[in-house]
Image 1 (cartoon, helix red, strand yellow):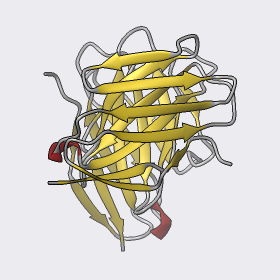
Image 2: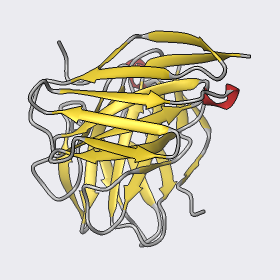
Image 3: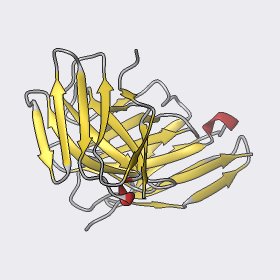
Length: 114
Length: 113
């Protein structure tokens, strides 16, 4: 069964550094998402992306965050200047063409900010 | 209450018993979904019920939705050790064609052998 894959599985970064989290969604999916889960807390919606632009974003997704689909297969989340509170699991998800469909999640990237 | 609150927070049952988890939400929704998360892993979609549906089945799973009460329940019948996981309800509240899913805080289910 097709899977959403995320790399790296664990990223350790110094505070203030830029970090890029990478995702390869399921190949025929058109809707892409990023979520984060701070340890012990809820999974939180960050952003949805469709047709090469952001569809919706949450208040968490401020100017430090950006997303990109650089080459038709990868979907990236960039955090420009990381803060300690950015430490979390980041999950990528995708869904197929019709939207309002189940989302398929990757196993996440654990981001640790030192 | 917040959007997507599960009850109970934790549930421990004997293998073979049924497990029932409840979810309440506040706003109007497009659909409601249930996901499972094993420790250290991503979320696995279990079942989606649309706002105009009242009940849905998938294998050992049964989901109900009561939009008048803004609540849903997930029933897992004949539980197995492999069902041990956290279960989250998630409400799709998007205004656009892309989804915007709001997750609840989850129920930690433990199945005792």
